[in-house]
Image (cartoon, one colour):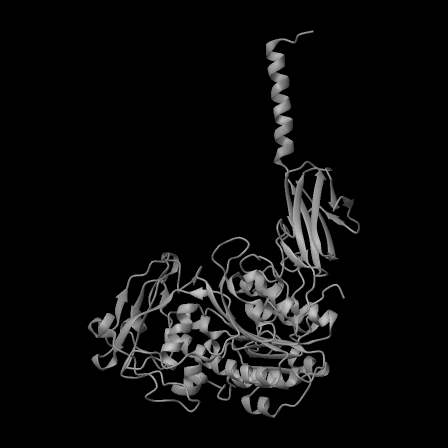
Length: 576
């Protein structure tokens, strides 16, 4: 029987509402669709179905077969989640399919192991060292011959390379990256959220329960027993070192990161860091822990030798080494080696140089017959580019370059060694001219452009380590493409000063302590008023490779590809 028009319309509306309700269910799968993994690389698989009614459930299948071991939760009223930890895949393409309360699919590919020749790997990461920052360091260290305009040489990281590449970087949720997700991409081969370390997103508030992805250091420790080393000039739980030994949604989980160094799966054998805040009990001055954990004492019970000064480091002879050389970050290279201001250095007058920490780390790890993976970060490049102090940032590139020189010498003597030099992200630093220091600070007429830039005179005075002194007659004119309002003087200062001060709800304004310096003038920025310093950029990054497996790195590479290139170079078989 034909139904009345109004009834037909009502039934049709009901049908549409039913379809809409079904379509409202949102299915999220991690690892994400298109993820690349190593065969055997362990990960936590998580499925979230949101926008459902109470009691609805979903089915999860891997390659057409129901997944076993799934734990079900209902984090929020309209959601159901499934997670299974420690999954791994065989070589080839695999598909996760979700049906029932919602439908979705994610396809991921697991790469088969390759036969690599590198048994020992040293990865240098210049934090914030984009192409421009690196070239500014070359201009200072080598420069040009004023008689003919030819370059007088290259940095060690640029010289005698086996291969080179330009690396693009991004995060899972933005094309502008931070240090946590970028270092994680190198460590695990995945796109990671900004501020996250080796985890996928989830819908819980707990930052430590997110689904994890195994890092190359964890794989090597699990499959071969290789040594693992982490060296940085920043505080020890900062994003870059943490990316090679920790898992968290929030890079600021500093105490938890410190705990994972000792209790996690990477189990670093060498850790040489700046800040000790997260390794000392809450009762100790400067600690930011909320408990009484004392990793200085506990590490020694675990067989580590502990050092806290350059002198102690140089004397160390051990299989497991833990060093903390400041309460916070290291002082900048120029503060340690050139300015040597007593107030700036405080109680930390015997901090080692990055090349010394690199050498001691290699000597310690080299005792492991199974090889090693050492990550060395020049972290203070970034820490000083942020506040627009380009001299301190660029001179830390020069400190890094001496560490690279040592590693290249070691690799030449040990043919099974790969040395990689790259960055995690870039800053907006750019050299646009020369500056005639004889005309005083803050003098725009002293900025030489084109032929009037002439040639910088760095190198006329050298410090005790053979690095040019920061002050010379003709310096570089350097600017930042992304900056808040700040005051410019063009010249270095013997004591660091922040570029801005807070004005409460109205944001940040130029620091009056800088603006009252001779010659200082206000430069209007282009960042939001809420920004107190410079920011990261989307610019590509340098990469230089030396030694065994260097040919794996060439051309344009996404940052996630570095993980797989490292695995191929080392012949990593995560299926073991």
